[in-house]
Amino acid sequence: MGKRLAILPLFLVAFLVLAVSIFRTASVKYVFSQAPSPVPETPEIASIDYALPEPELTPESPLWPVKALLDMGEQSPQEHLKNADIRLVAGLRMFEGGKVEEAILVLEKAELHLKRSLDAAVETGDLPESGEILYTISVASLKHREVLETILPRMPEDGKAVITKILDIPKTVYNGSSSELVKAGLIAPEYPF
Image 1 (tube, rainbow, N blue to C red):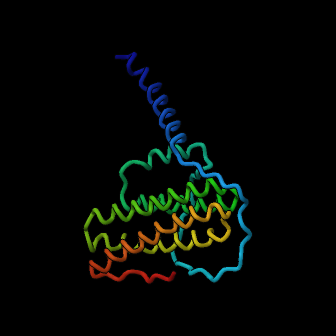
Image 2: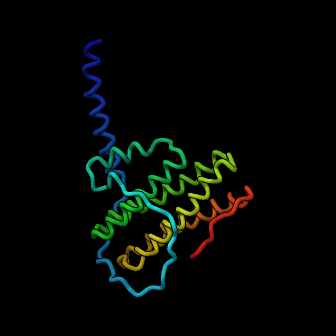
């Protein structure tokens, strides 16, 4: 019995190393041949009143794979939304720091968490209790779209298609959340795009 307990920490560390290795090798990698485009003159993008959090841990941190692994578990709509917002801010910072390929991966994960937050909120079906989180998800989807719209003109030409595809997710989330709010007799935020 004592030998088994002594081996347990070693087994846990080995399992963690294996899980992180699998996570890193299974992720999609983008490579763009062009440098980011200079910022063109664009029409003013709507400014959404929604505060994004400051990420405590970013994808550039060596502990990020552990956080990402933990985030794969089942979560509440609020946790998915928080993860989406943190990844959006981290992706924007990475993009602005010149790490375009890595930023796109992080932005894509952000929008997938945003979609999961809506799915989790709809699954609860506790309207009007979930009406508040649906409204927050709806506003967050507009903020995510705003941030992605600011990135799109500066993206290298071969990366614009990926960002355009990612832009569809917050639009879908907005449509789904506002539809659920209207079905519950609640008011959805205005779509400014």
